[in-house]
Length: 215
Image (tube, rainbow, N blue to C red; front, side, top):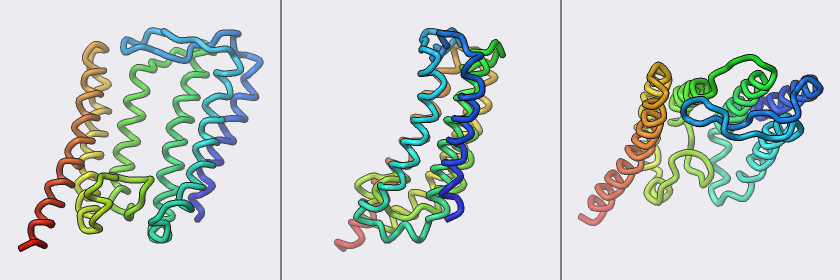
């Protein structure tokens, strides 16, 4: 249960940082960058300072509610700490991106085209290590029709998915060394493969299990 508050603490720190730095931010703040690291989107100072913290707060509140309406809600007791750790890590990732965005607005040059895949890669590595601990539910994990139907398929798929996420995370972090025009394609390819492999595996495993039940 202690991990439940980690994400909320991150949100509070984001809000405090935004409030402290608000007066120093320019009227127009860069909030979006293309694959080459060039600014192609701007927001007002208020939106830039508080949108991401409020998004994190909304996510934390929503993820408090979702387990209560999940038909498999009894399973959450079996991975409660993991559930909230994952929630907290995702919000922490938002906090890192938010901090980098504020730093850029204040004149500290941080390459967003590099920091984002680096952060995603690190997040994937950590999530991959915890993914096998996630029990069957409708809101978190590799939720395919086949994993949701069979606890065995769920368990095996999340074990394979964990390895895929770790490998993808390492590759994403390495890909930040590539030239900008190749980096975006590496990110897309690695993320797609990491998502596709467990999905296909879950189907093949379910089909084999179904055929075994019929024989």
